[in-house]
Length: 267
Image (cartoon, rainbow, N blue to C red):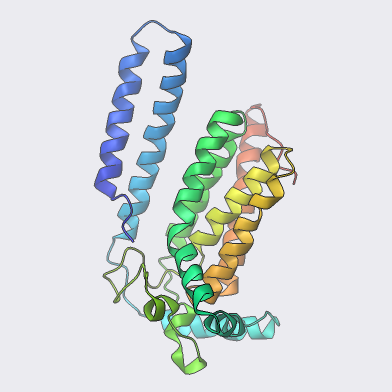
């Protein structure tokens, strides 16, 4: 899969920032106020995306300690009596259409879903937007820092029965170590699950529509996909959800300290 590169994101950030600066010197109208707000956020999101992509291409794919930590996570999950990812993967493999669909969901869904969520929130629920944008930035930053501690995902353990579902059925975002779009040994925590949790919880917390619970399924499907494909351990996803909770608490704490409005996040 090919996503927007860091230099393309940088160009977007520069153009959007330039549009914002130019419009600020023109007479204020309702249309210009909206465009300024939109271009400002686009510049900020593009800049954050650029930093994310730059961090993802740093030469961090050295496997030192990654396999050992992966085995430790597997052993810890057994002690915690968490369900094994292996049984889920075996279930998916029994149905080729499901295996291919799971691969597609893992490779494709997380970035577009996050973008659509942010656009929807910005247009329809502007007061809630800063909270979830800030949480997205904090969550992603935390994941990028923690990824320096290398952890191998389940698919690196064929001796335990795991397979690389994407290698078998296609649409891999990794390829050989060090050559793919994403980092091979950044299993802990799962950005896929973190972003899915942000989208699902954000939708449920931001609207009273009965359809909001349908979008909560994005988190469930993502947890299913990351585990069934062999790309993450259960604890990778649990850690990402916990980090999102910490990000929400930090944002609300800062807002209370400075007397800023605090959007409700009750589900």
